[in-house]
Length: 201
Image (cartoon, rainbow, N blue to C red; front, side, top):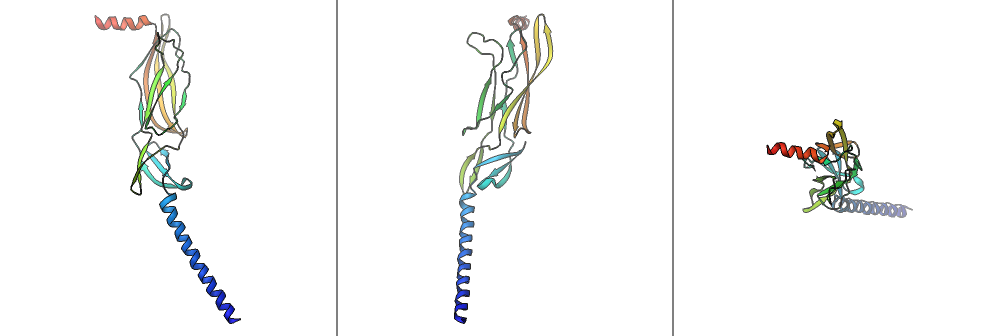
């Protein structure tokens, strides 16, 4: 009976050592393989969270190199108020650091030239080094650009509409990362011809 008891104690000790060593192996495996970063979330307008295995946060770091490229102004030739086809645009990421978007308006084309609104977003990728290997991380947070139109002046005869179009790069629908406003004008071609004539005088 005593021999059986000693054998059972030795067997349990051996199993304990094996279990502990297997836990150590698993821990090492996770640290070296499964904690490899696969993307980042936007925490606020100036900081991101790099995430890995099961969305665990590996590191928080500053990110202030977001870019929103817009035009100096937006002159349209027309005799009706400006309407924008879509006021929200999802930024679909595809391994590129920047993306350019054209937004349709209700303004008639001039020849083959569309009167649309163009802008671009940059700084989408994050350079990150893990275990000595450089990588580029994609944003996992949903990103979109929201447009908002505000009218500041409107005349019916002759037609003239002036205002601002505000561009906002937003993450998670709540975090405004960067915002820019651009003046716009809608007027007949004669309005712009008058501007040119006054410049030449």
